[in-house]
Length: 475
View 1 (cartoon, helix red, strand yellow):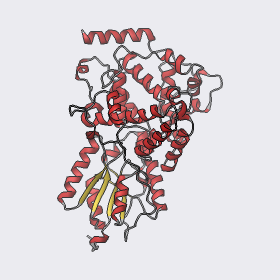
View 2 (spheres, one colour):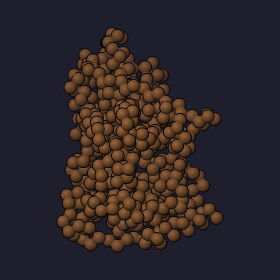
View 3 (cartoon, helix red, strand yellow):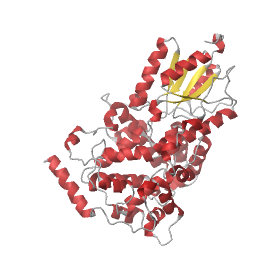
View 4 (cartoon, helix red, strand yellow):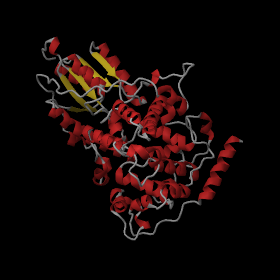
């Protein structure tokens, strides 16, 4: 270990999905300590397991954050391997006095962090975790009886008036250590390898880094928030903040969004409260993930374990490829391949169609979203799928089966969204409709000039089949 005076011993800052400077409790506390700082990003097994799109997008965020740190006279050290082994090696190489990080709330992340903290403390090293990417730590929100919330509306009522920490400002400089440890090259990690040719298509639709995230927030609150309560349901309209990819990479903090949204509400902007409720819906998902971690992989309601879900099947493959013959469903699926995200109305429609019209296990769909979404979030994805399937908390009731055709008439009345992404429905397809064929695997052998497929199942027949299955389960 280097011979370093204790007062000058650095702190290792372990960055994960918190790639920003402002609204960063961990970074603010470390800067206030006055020690040299060694920022590090670790490509550990938990991060390696991310789906293709999420891992690729995180790699873009890491590259952007490295540039941000360099502008402050610092560096982002890159290391690959199990987190504890990497951190112990860095402690030996730098003589660091401690390791700081922002908390994770998913089961795998929490297990990793608990083990790391215990091992570092046993070694006599300071190990400090800080509030992460939530407004409130999940265990701090309780019902009057001391339990956790199972329904969103009471949860919202419980937190809407709570104080939210003011976002710490970004540091103007970071104190560098006397010498820097070696770093991997990000390009060598090939974080986008699984995206294959899709990366070139999706790259045109991402907004990477903290500055881009803050600009998105400003642009949204300067205009679209006014009509957000209604426009958020219209997939052909740019009516949402589009901050989900930045939130999932931690390129913007939730406290920044909350306080900006509250200012908009105080200024009388009509859609601001609905926007804040959507941010709290994300909080609710993490609240449930903390208290019921099985939500990611098992039916939240155990009585659904006996339901005869179909496992993966040929119909589900048609769904994955955006070839169900239901234009609203297919447009949403194709939007995901072209842009890396999917409009929230589309997410509800495709999830309902897969789980109800096609009676396919929600886990089949959730796994596909895991792989394809640049804004993939473990809590929101799991809760959203279980909500649509009926097996989850605050769920859509079993008899609520979205009809893609009537949903399209209501939310895409002039078919702008459907034509934007489905080439077969237009004589002169636009660039996004054609980009789908450039993004999907070549092995699918899809052709924009092919005839649009017939529906997999009649909507009325699919609804009747689903209702019969639900009735049988309840009989």
